[in-house]
Length: 599
Image (cartoon, rainbow, N blue to C red):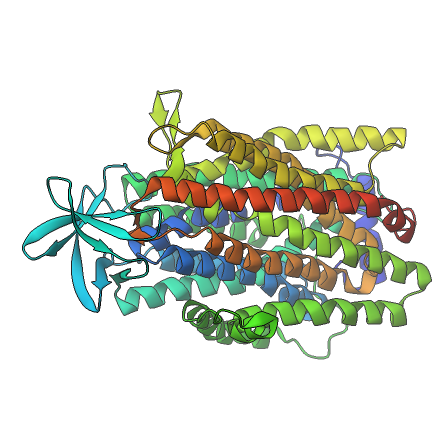
């Protein structure tokens, strides 16, 4: 909670309790709901395009793309740890949200400037060959007709990857003119340094801006309800529906514009959504007075200094992205120490912050709180660790699952029309919007009867559910056609299962943080919650790298190999998630005791 004094907090609580004019909730929830909706419109619209943009426009390899995507989304969730602290101490939530929204909008606008498509080439046995593209368009959607050739000895040779890792170069009559051994074919792209720099600057602006926006909009929602208000879980579920309502439309519209007009139009629409989000807080007509105000009694206004520090942080984040892209994997047999030492700076920063931060905050809770408060904080930290596992697996959506949709999914809808790979992410948002009211009523109804599942039980069900979603898709992969593509409905089924799992953990988790945290550091704890998701995003990038497939000019040359690779990885992580979910269900009873009646 970012209210400056006990009096302000009490006033906010009283107002939230007395004014129930929007679906039985404080009317301010409607504005915060809409603000978050437009912010998520921008973010998820951009995210629906990002992986495809990196692989198809900039021609980064799967490994580089998944690593950069994981690093970016990790930092998006790490910066709220700092943004929540700055809001608690100096800015207040409302001012932080406005500043973050402006930075994010600028970042999306910069992403519109991608320049010309990177030029593909290949190196074979030390010799460079230019790659000739046929039926290739610089857009998110693949047609399946794209082909890649090299010219060798006056012959135009089709590039075809083999299941054993070798590459066959086929002559026009179909016979193998040349065979390249595994590891001997190195495909790459020649990119303009200026536009690559603009890409990273845009992502850096979004990263820093999100740190100011993300934790503090959630904290403002928590401040609408007094302690012990049974409506809080339902309120956060409604708020969470706003997140997905925004992403639902953007994940349809941004890829559509990118396909029909150009990449710039898709990113431009995301930027416009972000501007709308800023305007709702900037011009709130006094409706949010008393919520998210700066702490009272500050000897000096540090607003400008904090804004300047945020601008200085942009090149720092940019450096982390460049370091991540240039990271060298550890040598075989290097062991755990070798792996840790080989981690890019971002990996060391994330794991170090997480491993050291949790015990430090628990020590503070032990010193500053009573026994019950300390035990509640312990329960919160245990759930935060399990939360990390959930998002590691769930966040394959923007990376490996998007690439799976592009390469190994039949995107035809009942044979009437087709959607793009980027648009498949809308399934998750659609199911959240459809199911969030149902889940909200379910929790409220069960709560009235005194039989609502505890928070640990909800978390355990979520973990088992995310694993079940992957196993469902793997089952469907058995029915892939001769083109090695799975029906879109198997992918939709995965997102349905994942959406139910998400509703059991994410809005519940946000509410849990506000309930179990010490009141003096609730903003910081909200940041720790997002830190756990940050670590998960980074590890998700590593998992997606395991599912990487070799590409040439942004296209896979062997669809059977890519299907086998994806299903093997999805099978493993599916069963791991189910086992961990069952483990948490077994721990639910002792955790409940530590929570001292918090539901």
